[in-house]
Length: 296
Image 1 (spheres, rainbow, N blue to C red):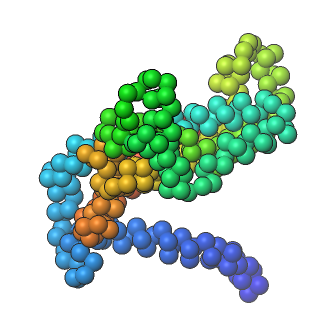
Image 2: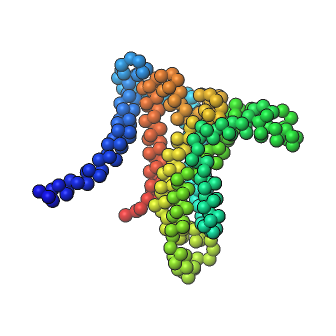
Image 3: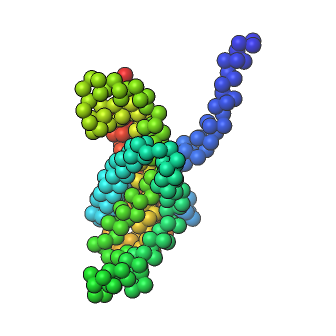
C-alpha cells in the first residue's frame, strides 16, 4: 500500500504545472481552434461555418496575402536569425573579458529587454518624430543632410526598417543570458585538446568546440528568438500610432489578428489568424529543434 502511494506521489508535485498549463495554454488554444470554425462577433452566439474563415483568409483577404504575410516573414527572417546571431556574438565576446566588466556590460545589454516593448517605443517615437523637434530630424537638418523633416514613422519606406532596428536593439533577453552562461560553462580543457588536435584560430574554435558544447543553450536561445520575434508585432502599431499601420507597411500577423479581433470584433476570423500564426511559430520552432536539438 505504501509503495502504491509512493508511485503516485509525483503527481502532487506536477499538479500545479499541469493545472496552470492546462488553464492558460491548452484550453485557450483549443478554444481558438474551435472558434476559428465559427462566425463570432462577441455578442451573438458563435455560428459554425466550417472552413470559411480559412478559405477567406487565403483567397479573399488581399491585405493578409499581399502585405501581412510577406511583412511577417520578412520581419521574422531578419529579426529572428539576426537577433539570435547577435546574441551569440555578444555572449561570446563578453566571455572573453574579466568578470566584473562582463557583469556590467551584460546588464547594460540585457536591460532593454526588461522594459516593455510599448514603453520603449515611446522613447523611439521621440527619436523618430516627424517634426523638427524629433532628435533624428533635428540632427540631420543641423548637419545639412535634410532640408525638411521626414515622417519616419508614417512612411511605408522607413517604418519596417525602423521596426526591425528597434526590435533587434531590444532582443537581448533570456536567450542572450542562456548563451552567455553556456559559453562560460564550457570546460577550458576542451579548448586545449582542440588546439592539440589541429584547431588554429578562434573561428575554428567557435565552430568545432563552442557551438557543439552549448547546444542546449543554443536551442533555448533559438526557441526564445522565434517566440520573441512573433510577439514583437505590437512595436509597429506602437511606433506608428495606428492599427492598421500606414499603408499596412508594418502590419504583421499579430496586428492583423488584433485588428479583426479587438477593433472589428470578428472573433472567429481572428481565431483563424491566430491558428495560422501558431502553425507558423511551430514550424520555425521545429527548424530550430532540427538544428540544435539532440540527435539520437
